Length: 334
Image (tube, rainbow, N blue to C red):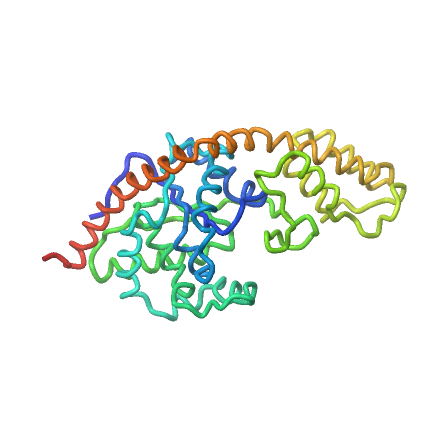
């Protein structure tokens, strides 16, 4: 029997593999914050997912988990309104993942587009492990164990969710209806390039982190890639595709200032120094309250950990109820 919740539920998670940056802010956290107003939100630290690629070096995962949770709170996630928890503190995820493995053809996992893409992108890591192949199935367990109605995803994640929906239907064909079939909640977000105009990645060292102090933000902005053909301030420059202006569009709320800078840049009437100085000011204005809330959370590490433990207790209560229905459906009762 499928459970019915009073408010529609959203589930999403993030791997604790490093510090969070502006890409995480516009790609997920701003949206997570808005969703709290309308949905019953479950947000989790996906530490088991981190192990699928970081299994050879696990020493920093728990530290990253705590640091990331502070960033979530800094970005506006409210533990009183949303359930924040640690994936590995809810072992029911693993039990459901195991049961779903029994009914899922390997070919379904091999055809997920991002499987081969990530193997190519992370060529320095050995990703021939079973855990990496099965991570979309673990994602399925993460979502359906909470009767999630929606999963906030970008276009590139839709195939993962479609796999989840197929697995749910296959389970129901064997055992009857148990799960809510999750729907995508498409979240178009600006795609931020890295400071060097490559893909944003901490491995490239081309990010602005949410915890960077104001002077570090200024220094990083000064180093940003701009129009390489523009050798002097009086040379007309290209705005389209220019990382500095992509960031202005994403983070500078003063639209008149942005349009003025674009007009003068195209006409060769403004230098990169002014454009970058105003961008750094806009970024620091956006990050100031995030840094303040983040610092307050990290100043009380015991309370931060207890918040995650308590959230995990609440999550486990919900997950355990789902697993009772699953075991009844599969007839694993003794």
